Length: 193
Image 1: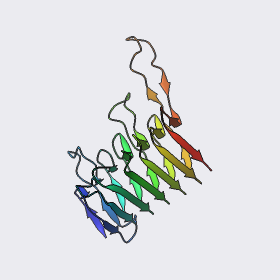
Image 2: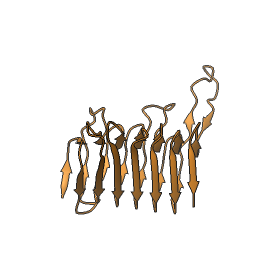
Image 3: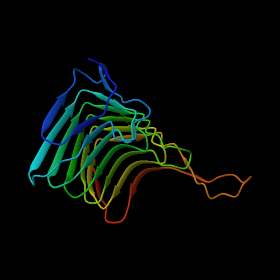
Image 4: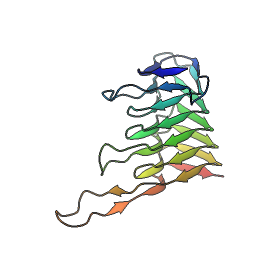
């Protein structure tokens, strides 16, 4: 139990077990510009399994980042709260990146300004995402983004998408505001059950 003012980087197979998300917090200080929890495999060409369970992740940019490298990364996240992450709460990128979310709450991901997206969950460039019994609340602009990746989402609730102010309005004119629950971009595939 406790609050850990640090970033956590995984480069090999590991299981991170917290007592429960209400009691274990991973929260680097406001000066951190990297992900709070980052899975970035080194060399190897093998599959790297990572399990994260029973913690709260907050503060940095993004909250959880899963990137492929020379190895395939399979990250299973269960009973985790990700809150107040800057720009993206969960960010999966690359064909070797796979993220499975189960009973995860993404709460109030924030943009860095009124015109920057604070996406809840992002899967791009071939990443695979699975979300079950997950809630995304208070995303800034877009709650779920899938572009060039695959996502399977079931029993997931998206609430309170805050509008994103478009910055191209002339001075003195009202700004246009947009917000999307789900955005599927070029090459993205999304299955919702």
